[in-house]
Length: 294
Image 1 (cartoon, rainbow, N blue to C red):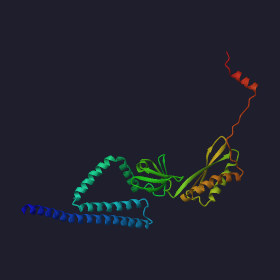
Image 2 (cartoon, rainbow, N blue to C red):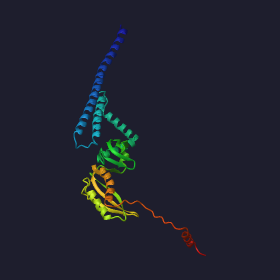
Image 3 (cartoon, one colour):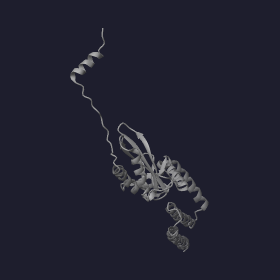
Image 4 (cartoon, one colour):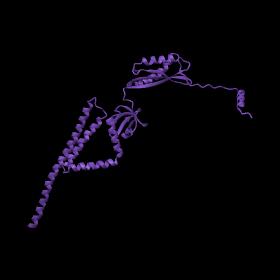
């Protein structure tokens, strides 16, 4: 009888142990799943709330909105994952130590990526440009900024092409922002024939730019002689305008200066070359005179 009882007792003990641990770990698993679902749901809701709040603020820089939204989303998710692991008895200090070691290893392996993150951080902090600005960086990067991320900056070129540039290629180059200042100067040149009335042409050009409302009074427009060439006097028309009126005014003045100088009787010269034909006999005489005499 004892031989039969002992195996049955052992089997009951094992089943009881498994049942007790199954209930305990089962409850931990269910709690972990609930924490994971609730945490991810809260992260999405909080990110949407931050996005809506920042979108309703007209004074907040649009460049930082995607970054702040991503930081909020992933911060909540990381906290959720740590809480899930804690349900299975994993110590938080161990998690932090593992994350630190993993971060060091990843940092050594991805030095170029970290350079992009550092450059993106500097672009977001110092903000040499914002979304919607037209910029150039070095000789190869040019376009309207669409978004500044931690790794890359996306632009749209003048002909509508999507451009994605690593941040370190922008931060390491001289950056020219054509949209930062509210006003911009333009220079247009026009040639006037040497025998035309220069003062009349310059006076007509002054009247032309003064009558255009898009030309700013301060700084005042300047009409000056830039150069005297072999066939023309080059007059420089220098005016200032608001950034939004720049290109419309520029194209109008390119045609307007021509029509203005022609309306006062001046002509637009073109390069000329005078060719002198020497008779054959005279050419032979000049050749003989050039030869040395013995």
